[in-house]
Image (tube, rainbow, N blue to C red; front, side, top):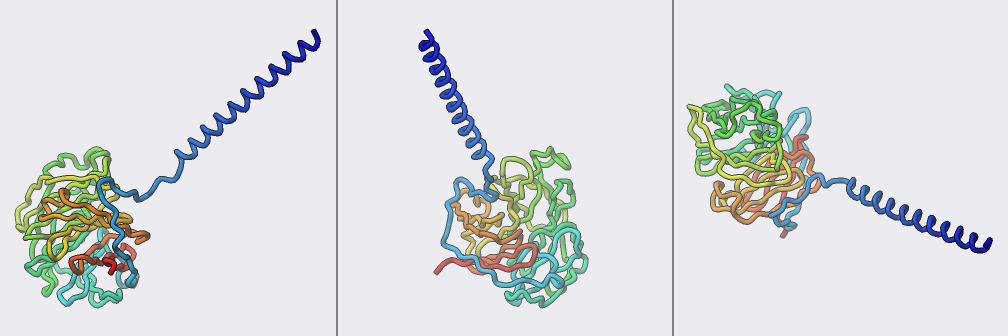
Length: 305
């Protein structure tokens, strides 16, 4: 009888040990699973539907002097083959001319200008410079405009005010904060604007604004696409075949016969690596681009040879 009790006790002890081991294994799996879920999220994930293009090299060209050029929020070619850049909200209405070495060549105080929130710059076929005064972080502005500047006279010669047809609240609901624009381009005497989505869904909206100074125009969104990073600049290649959008860690290259069809053609994304808070982008030929970040570092994005 005593031996029988010993056998039963030993059996029960074995069952308890197995149960404990099983529980420990389950706890380890659960803990491991939790750790995986808590893994660091990719800050700049690739966008579905875009092919990754690794045929470009990014090289640092120079750094602008912080005291002479405090901020670079946009980038455009000057008439003499150098570059214009500018600051955004909270700064004077000035343009800085720099060369590829980052040296300040000229400071243009734009007569008649006011920097509400200058976010991008473009040059028209008419020779004028156009500033996108359309920064709208809080989505509350009702004075959005594109400013026309005579480069030689160094003054504002016209404004193109506009408003979004699909914005009726200032600001809209938090999830619908998609009326900020930091990137635009000019093509065939029209402007094409790409939103910096601060709401939900990663949707980038495309608007078209006619180059008609004077009365305010109301513009409808032409199209939209989901891109996983916020758009901070835009440009079109000289041959008009490619549109580049600047995002955090990526340049999105879109092939289209017209900016109105920007989201309908071939889509690629070029990795930038660590380029900082990049906000200026300019095609220097049909493939290569110059990029500037807010702190004044100038980069060249070149197709590998």
